[in-house]
Amino acid sequence: MNNGIKQIKSGIYNKGEINFDDILQSIKSNPNIKESGAILSFTGIVRNVSNEGKLVKSLKIDAYDNLANKTINEISNEIKKKFGIIDLKIIHLKGDFEISEDLVYVIVASAHREEGFDALREAVEKYKKELSIWKREDYINGSSKWVY
Amino acid sequence: MKVTVLYFADFKDIAGLDKENYDLDKNELIDLINLIFEKYSLFKSLIWDAINQTLKTTISIAINDKLIKKKDILSIKLSDGDKIALLLPFSGG
Image 1 (cartoon, each protein chain N blue to C red):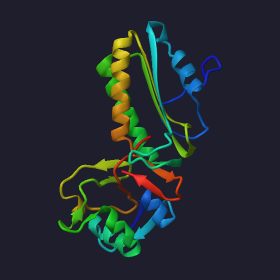
Image 2 (image 1 turned 180 degrees about the vertical axis):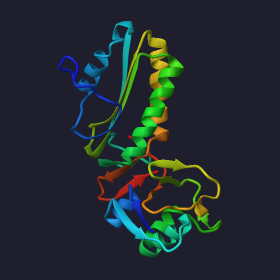
Image 3 (image 1 turned 60 degrees about the vertical axis):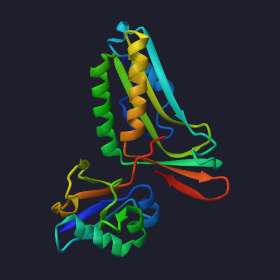
Image 4 (image 1 turned 45 degrees about the horizontal axis):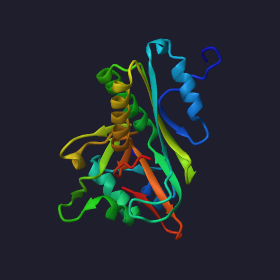
């Protein structure tokens, strides 16, 4: 705890364990936040239709936490260094989700918006490809499928 | 030699478990994979390239929480207590 603010580390969390505001407050408590002129965020949420056009009822997220947490740290370190940003949090939730519920948060604090947008975009593209996380779509018609 | 196999996604649904211990007489990864296929034939269709007699190129292997990047991965030697995961292609949210 820092001035009563919960310090949030990037990583895999169970649904309900953490929310967007906790992460934002944690970023704003960074000792270097005074150098920031922008905080940018991406929230991935559950869409009601699959990439193949099937109607989705709910989603399950499974994760290999130890491996994913290592990869998140590698991605964070690489992006912080590349773009010179002040802070970056990548939080992926796991468990069972309904439509429109939050699945993932990527939040960047940067001195200027340009490097912030670039860092945010790269962090999102990387977590999608590199994290050992899997998604099962449960469809309205009663079937379900792990998506690869 | 005892090793633990971690199951994720489809594997977890098929096995109904998130991990399982295996006793190995031989110590190559292929020996473990054959044991897994004997127990869960459905795993084979998910990860095995029957034409080339190897793992599908989309499958990754992790040993002790570390991704293994090696060409002849099936002959990699396992050690007692290793924790092995067969990883289907990732699909984050």
